[in-house]
Image (cartoon, rainbow, N blue to C red; front, side, top):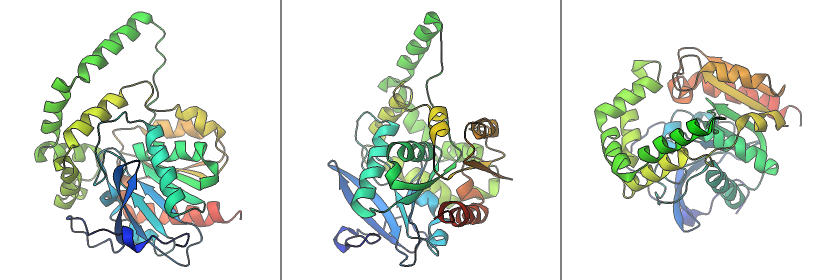
Length: 313
């Protein structure tokens, strides 16, 4: 097996969701006893491979408008994080660190040469932590809407006690399970997508099917409860500001100006922490700019890789 090729025995059947934009291969990889779905397109002329990591509620399919275009110049990999997409959905403590370990071991198994990490939302947070934890793995990291999910500094003991009690109630299975079945209803998914996306035209039936399909799989409700409970824990996420400050590799932020989930002001505050960090603001785009304005995102990614990641070498 070469650095940019996968073993044919690990290629699985095509997933059920049709997608005319993707022309690569899908595979299943057993990681720590769990099935992980991945996709790839090998480009023999690739100067550096690219690995795409989706956000909360997303999957490989959320990169449907990016993979093939990026693969014209690079070998491209995409992976469904544990608990999402077509990967297994176990009941386990979910943390950014767990997904970082998944990404790192995937890289050790299939790639083995330094890569460019590209993430969206929680995927961008995973990529950032992976770059900090395993710098030998990464030549550059691009983050599309980077959330700050670290615990807020609540000095008052009474306020902290109240917060813990509220979180405790919200994470009870008796609350989360009905919430899951409500949130996966088509009208609710469409409303959520319309909030995440700035352009109504981007909220298509294909997109809704991509978002809803994983929620119908075995174990989805239990994984949802476990993930939501973990996300409210103080151990779920690292402090991104300290990581950004210490980053010593090409780093790119891409942000939709109409992002209603994570305000653009966060990006500007992060720019002050590290001169290596660059920002591209995307007009008429929301939280999932890679899917909402893929032509611009693909262009900016390729330009940045060519001029910032590869040029110094």
